[in-house]
Length: 200
Image (cartoon, rainbow, N blue to C red; front, side, top):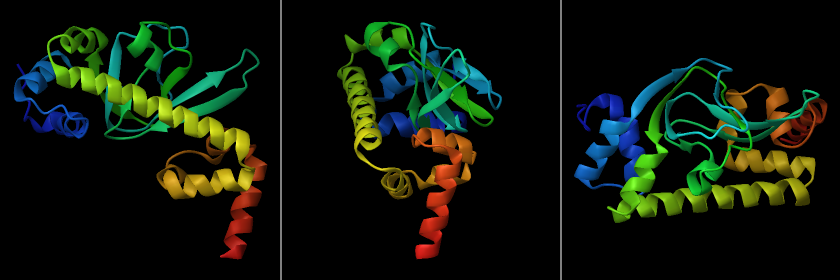
């Protein structure tokens, strides 16, 4: 049995506590059923159409969600870094299939938490119910904000939003992926960056 205070689980502990999960017995139960998994850069954690059985907390590395067409066109949906939850919201809420691919951008280590543990303990522990509600609300609000950004803001405003909210992405993903995330091509992104650089 792993000790919940083992340094290996420190990021998991900190993340769960930030979501209000702080009961020692519950934390120990989660650690007991959680596995630590490694993924190489560009390795898929969840394929579109999969019915994933686990939700993740990122210990180290970077994960993206993306859509891909049969012709090879790719749209980046969102990125997650260390200390954040990652997984299929549809699977968490409805036990349905994942609607996008989940991929490690760089070498990534995650804590894999069984979804059935979350569901099973909701009836036993109020903190698990609160965790599910907060995860659902957080992801819904993030999706809504991103949809508004893409539909109502011009390219320069989208890039400015990135600088204000997720500047850490600039040093961790290639420019073509950043451009896809912002709903533009790499050439347009390059022009915006040069324009803003000149203005400064």
